[in-house]
Length: 290
Image (cartoon, rainbow, N blue to C red):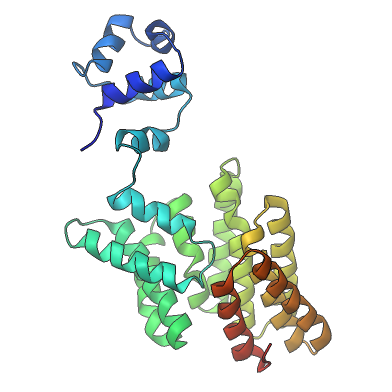
């Protein structure tokens, strides 16, 4: 059950105390707008976008209200995917895999299929430390996305979670293109926030390839980007990976200090799952138990 489009338009307009004449503007007659509200006429795309603009509401908000203030199906999957802050949130990804599978049992959708593949790859890495088993899932997603002329928010989010599966040169090339795309759409907060995530995962790629000095520099850039964009929920991962890089550079005291800072931040935010995940990374890549 959902509201009809005209019903939602009327509901929002009345709640904002806007008149039909005001919303109609110079794009349509008041009679036409009245028919749209009454469900007697479907607006063209141009008229619909004009209505949203006059109502000062986004398309996402409109859909949410139209669906009786709930998310379901692909909208819910997309929302959950964008809510995952780091690629070490295993439990959330396992639940998302199940949602994707349920959806794909009834519908064909390349984005939902990509989300499921990305989550499967990340879960395999973090639960079984198996890059070899995870790689085919990442490769499958990259094969499709690499052929696109442009990447937008969804593609950028997907790519951020797989580029570190590839060889160093390929990964660097992917990140350089992704950062250009992010800068091009920097006025969207959702894209701007991805920059820190890319830098954090680039740090991991450099660590995996034993480029520890470069990893340390990249982690520092990620920390600064987190501060600028107020991404405090992921800054701890940047500190943890900076610590890993420093320890491997022979700067154990500085490295442990950075790791302790990561633990303090995550503890303050109640991110117990994240702490356990990056502690696992630390043990694997430094042989130090924190």
